[in-house]
Length: 152
Image (cartoon, rainbow, N blue to C red; front, side, top):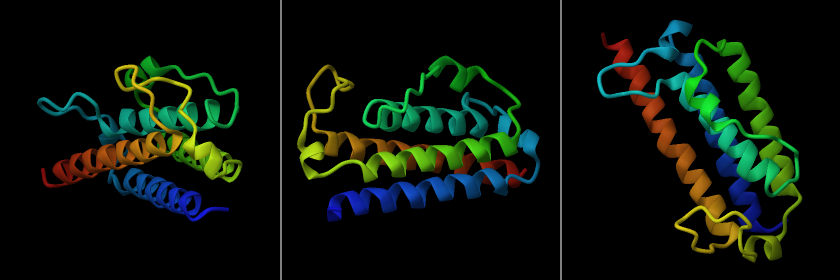
């Protein structure tokens, strides 16, 4: 396994672990669904979104997992239990690691088959880096949401 794939695995493993810790750090499960001011996506929906995003773009597109994404539900479902979301994170991590294990450097150099950035072709490697950045972006939002609620 290449160093690049090992590094990607380490990033996703670390950050999905942090996502689960953030989920569990909310004092009350109901706080996961609080919308405050201009914040329209509570932590619960961001967790669902991140799992759906990774299961789709990594698991289904790259790994052929058969996962069917329902993006609207990621933002519209409410009051999903913390336990169910923790299980979803674990399943997401398993799919991501399994898929990355199946790739090699030649796969990373290929053009990613789904055009997501204004229809411009990008390599799978660059798209995986984007997905990692997308995960950390929303992790920051979740962390801020949790700390904001805790300070009230």
